Image (tube, rainbow, N blue to C red; front, top):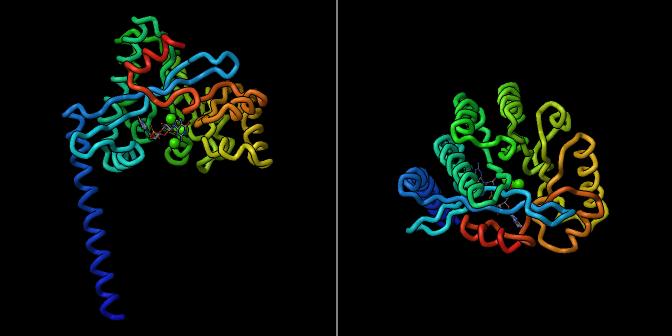
Length: 274
Ligand code: C2E
Ligand code: CA
Ligand code: CA
Ligand code: CA
């Protein structure tokens, strides 16, 4: 038994070393990946539930490494937030999304574009002035640009967060509260911060067939609308879910049922077919 114990210890150390090594490599690799042009943005349509028309897209980052293959944003974004690289990567994401918006506008695809913003990015002193400056320089209508933030941003430094969001909102950019219902939200946040859209997390939709699940979803939609927000359901995969969302007057949805996130070229084809 003693021997097994030591072997196990040995095994765990090795495994731990491996994890540490992988993290260090990933840390280095994701910085190099920006230099090597390995990131790109995919776009998932946002759809109006009443008209079934595309009203906007959400930009979602993709990292396709020639050596490691596809690395999911759920893997590298949290790491980039931890090691600070998100500021650099975030700048690239904003620049790329805004350039795409301009390209599409020229092609006659004049739709809103939503950009995911990490807490660290928003709290960086230079972010807001730089963002506003960029919109001005590129001559972009701010009401076409939406920033998606998550409620856990409200927990720390909420004064800074509030000031920054207010500046962006006053300038004309819209704000979406992403993954609503999954964090440690206090509902008072909904009145304290300038939020235009509530994005209800997929978890609520997965649960809509149960009595409790449907009560939550319907209540969130009503509450959001009473607070003058539009409500967007995330992760819609079936017609049944769409019928239900229509019956409770939800405003918009996103999900594989309509379209997965697409490359810019594939989105263009999809847009003109619809
Ligand atoms: P999120 O912002 O909540 O994005 C929604 C995720 O759900 C996306 O995963 C999307 O591909 C996926 N999704 C959309 N429709 C469906 C559906 O019908 N069914 C299912 N099962 N999934 C669906 P993705 O692209 O892997 O992104 C994961 C997360 O990574 C995002 O969650 C966001 O938190 C983060 N992320 C992605 N791109 C960026 C970015 O450019 N900047 C920042 N800061 N974070 C990003
Ligand atoms: Ca999002
Ligand atoms: Ca979400
Ligand atoms: Ca999420």
